[in-house]
Length: 135
Image (cartoon, rainbow, N blue to C red; front, side, top):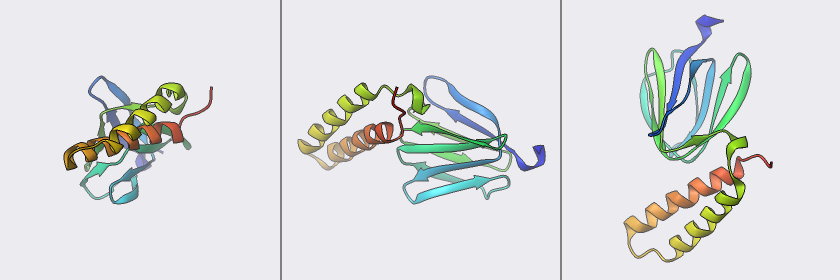
């Protein structure tokens, strides 16, 4: 099976979140949903907060990612995100508080830049809630 896999890594400012040989990768960008397989054309893409789905050894698993970008290269693919976490690790009450704060901040935005930053904060909180698992 090694011939149908490619190297993939998820990096955050704090640590290497994931590293391994995978068969496929699906993620959401500002242009929509993408899937990457071995030998995908090289590209750099901006990530939207959402879920990155990783197929490894025939099994799909998902992680919740914040904004970032991804570099798809000829030999490996690297996803850079501010945060990334497994759905079971999402603290739902914290994410709910973050969503409330983001909605209020968005409502009180005074500039375009502030509005965009607050939109990103809200999108991140909503992605965490939407893709978390109840504990």
